[in-house]
Image (cartoon, rainbow, N blue to C red; front, side, top):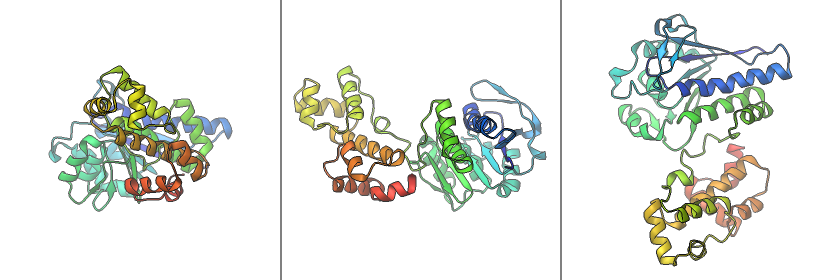
Length: 324
């Protein structure tokens, strides 16, 4: 097979993990292919910066570029990492990077942003009319600054044509794994994911917020244990009465304390957790919907269907077809 060229733009203030996370996945895919098909390479990877200079990452790490961005040709896959240096206003965007993106990015077959790299793509005019995502904490700013862009803060990554945008650091890893699966197959992606000790694979439609992330972590150990119990036992009795009994509190005390410390009611927390479990089972197993509903704690498949419709606007079967 012919290697796909990959180019990563570097600039002062870049987030190093936005660079090394996806590249670690692609390098792992190269190792996988070399081991299974000797002599073959999946990706030919290079980095480039304005003037070819080394850059100072946010963490203080200094990154060396392979070449001058001005001399780079559009690759198969272009990766634009995030950073914070250019978030205070459009004039702070690196003009050399933006200029190169404006002139060359459309020639790439895949244009990818990690985290706030979406700001650079938007400044270059590449996201107009596109549905995109970015880190949840910057989504509102992206939408405000670039009103022609449709910003969805929920998914971990989004594809709209040749444009692929992702949320925080680990979402860049998820997106790179999705590329490996598309390019080399599921076994390759699973092998790389296992080696990196990450999940294969959080689908792009998965929320940036798990049930635990949408709520706060409770202060009291007993309530933190309840939160973990809910996540680990979605098919158990998770009524307020049952959870209160486990916490050795009255139902009224439990509800008041749980809501105060987590920011959500017990019922809402349980609903988020069960939906999250069902989504994961639909994505990662071949269980039929009856078994998924039972394992996720829904009393009937109809109850699960209603939960999916309310939260996602899809039936469980539709969700599986889109994310399996």
